[in-house]
Image (cartoon, rainbow, N blue to C red; front, side, top):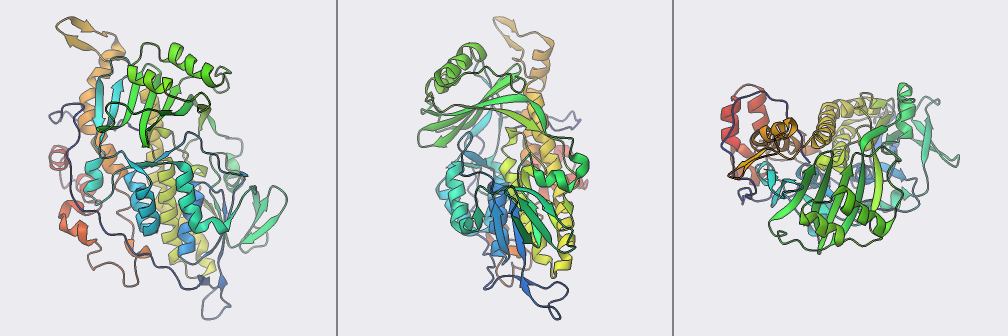
Length: 517
């Protein structure tokens, strides 16, 4: 959940004591935007509404993951005829709960106020507590990051975690009648010259005006959309992940939400997911397919005695508190950013176009952002002929943002594996004197005071730049485009203000950091 930021500067703020909670904020949460729900299905003519027979625009979504379901929710609320096709016969969560960061929460708030409220009611907030990196052996804090301040400045809620089945049920309550399980989209046909025909694994052909490929990192829609990608299948990322949920309540649960225990070429993540449970992940540098073939208790014992031997008692407490049948293992795959998102009436979304390594907690969040932007551009399309242009605009609006977050996620994985126990000077002498240990120590202040603040300022800047009137009541927002609660907070609450001041040279880096942190 962290990444280095490539800035070259000698300016360093006085360090906040590591392990101290970020300052509390009491800014009010903005009231939800009221979505415009059409009283009848959206009717779009093939040429112009005045001269052609109007029929509902039919959207086919390949993939019923979080991105696909959110896209269905967005487009259905805008009046489109939506159908989702998911290859799985049932939903099976891997790793349990998922994180919804502040930017994704704000996107959901703009999409559907009731969905947003349900998620907050059924999730566990972690963004208002201490979150950060600890040395896996000494158990000392290496660096913390403030998730609360950049969210609160924008009137956003702090990051939360929610059980995946609960989130799926919240979405399925709204769009479940549009979902077909055990139905994989394996290809599509545009030879008819108008619209698109999706082809299912059993040979069934489904006609639609638009196909959204939200079918994950192994996307078949992506392979056909960009044939040059066909030989370039996802590649092993360099990591394998063991995931489980422990039934225990650590002593620091009231103050700490998210911890990453670091060691050379491995790390262990723990997250409070509520109800006396801690979700944990063990990331190891083991080639794909080469993990030991073990199950249950044997796997837990192997992790404890060979991979995390001598590590923090907190790590061992979680392993010891894990049911033997709760652990799962998965090799992690990755692929580079995709620059071709659309072709005619077909587009890609979520992991199909920008798979994320899990370190920033932004995988599902980026798909939710995609859905919001796609809805914004689809809303503007007045005719069927304009749908390809709407898709190209969607891609243009998302490419830089998603590629940058994808790069940050990948870089954070690479850097985490380069960690070494930092050099430590005390009355007893000097410990950990190797080159990597000294480099690790030298980066501590930079991460604490520069990299982390900039990272989360950028991540949570979305969706401030989007036109909020797309999902607002008829008549839109006030003339200044700002929510009442955000206006009360003053200029700093204006979405994107901080970033603009730095990027356009209005403020120097030193002045900017001192103003916002």
